[in-house]
View 1 (cartoon, one colour):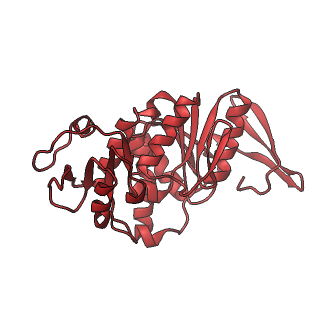
View 2: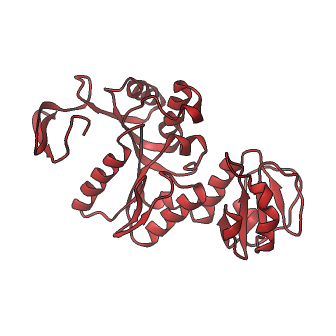
View 3: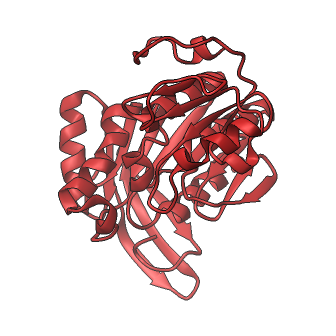
Length: 296
């Protein structure tokens, strides 16, 4: 019911309670029984398509701009539509992230490579694994072409639910700074999150490097509940490590730096790939990879 999805929130006026059968952000894809989120973006304003959504069978509308009203169905304004959509999506799909182990990966570069390396490790360990990322969304052995590195909250929670229902136990998700800024993964429980690096990019969206950094930091300070794995060769990684350590999150650092807990030494590269050792608990863990370059 609509009231259950909105439980704990505050908004002006009263509304008629209705049964919600689905969630939609595109008025052209609304089917009877859907709740429609009228999102305002850079190129489109969903508020222009509320009537179309109603005509197609929407039973309620969540908006960030309109006045409350009925229009034949409840039209409910909220102060932060991205936050509300993330909350309602997680609730509608049964909070699937709480039923699996989730790893979030963020950083300017290296998210996709890291996610596929982790998927390979998990699969070798016999774990049924899913991925959401730049190239594709993978549910077990099925792969779907990705539209966004991190899907909208409605799609992200639905994909997680589908993964859980297909027996996936471990999920690796690329988490972009746009997704963090727009709260697409809010109300998701990440067990562990990984930081790769931060370089000058996406300033058209974030404005400054500090704002870009703060967006990345949200993944660790607000959405990750067990541990952060941080590249401290990157100066922003060192800042994240310090900030989340103070906040009480367990931190494991990695890199080529002598200060890293997991430190690559005796690095050797040739046409076959890269080999190195990791000193760990008084012994050396030997690692070889067909990937080229120290960045890998």
